[in-house]
Image (spheres, rainbow, N blue to C red):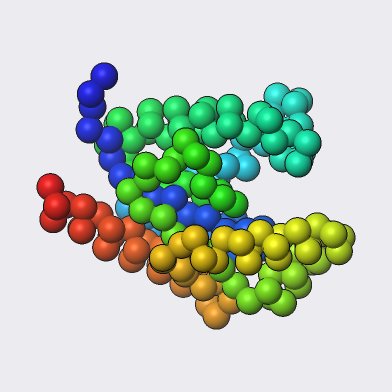
Length: 170
């Protein structure tokens, strides 16, 4: 099938960056934009009872990424642009229209994660992830200086600028 796909905007961020917090703002102001979070299908870190959101499940992560790619592409074939929220970009989504990193100060991230009940080792792992992600992205939206609604507006401005640039190349 050679169908034109609507844009896919990949938004990443280590735990505590604010991905879940911006979801409502993206949906409210997105004007038909479909917003998906990689964790939405999980229940207690598992998919259909199979643990997936744990380091030991790394061998099944590519299959999970492929499943998400299929779900996303079904939506995009219908003409709906998608914002996909994920801690990192699964390799199956490397052909997204654009990539953006949500980031915040490490101390703010640590405070957010401790407020969720994360223990010290989990917080340190998230901080390591954040440090590793920073050099990988050209576009960064900060989440430590604004409320989630304002951050969502920044993300939507980015999707519009990427969409306008893509339309200009067509």
